[in-house]
Image 1: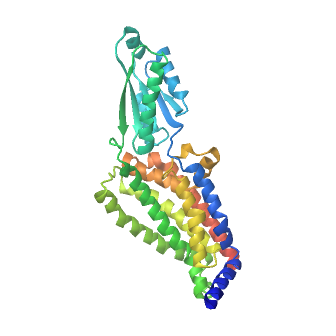
Image 2: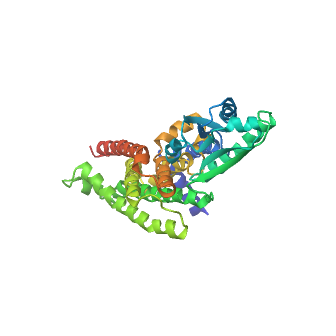
Image 3: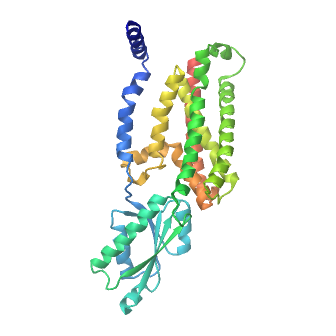
Length: 364
């Protein structure tokens, strides 16, 4: 028992002497609980709505106002042609599109049955399903309020994922998460392992520059990440049956800046941590878990408080999840997804610069 007590005391003293691990143990859970408490909700509010009013009548405006005045929808654009909706749905700037046909008011006045069309973005199965349900409820409330004498028939159309199969929506995001975990974890221990093994000094006396050392550390893990994708891709396509409607070239072009982000984050962690245990904990609790919460992987971003929505703009996983769903389900290319690629490239460059400056300060 005395030996056991001595070991316990030794471990507690070791924790106390490690100033970097204590905040992770006690502050990180509180921060994560706060983020998860706000972000973890399956309710969908403020669904991005595009409206195409082909009738341009008082009756059609009344119907459109019923949608825009609801807390469930947020109008992002009004277009003059249904063909113009393709861009907004392809780029995920609109999740739902309402099309009011020409002759809507005349049919209402003549007592003829009327229909409106609702187009849902099925690449996000949760938002698509709930958006259709909210639209049906909105039409029912309008009819009950006496806005129209006859009920209105809703003709829904779900694009990209007509059957709203949840695995089509989830599996590409899981692929993104696996790539993030593997590349970030491996690169986070790149420099720490050298320090623990006592080989960092030998590495520094070589004629290699800090930039060359960093490149030599990151390229092997980039190759590992590439192998991970090539291994997982057949599982996604053939085992789960997720359609790949876009090109592999587009997928590769968008994966490269994402791996730049994850590898750079891992390298930055490697310059901050002193042990591999520290590196794993910092990577998991400070960088990995918040990205999963705030990327839209599970919880819709539009449901989060405004401050957390702003934070998501610096989350690389957000852009990669959007890019993967666009390539797999929508079949769009860089002409639509270039903002996501550019955002990841910019974030990766900034993070890599910070990691290089941190590494130079250590070796200097």
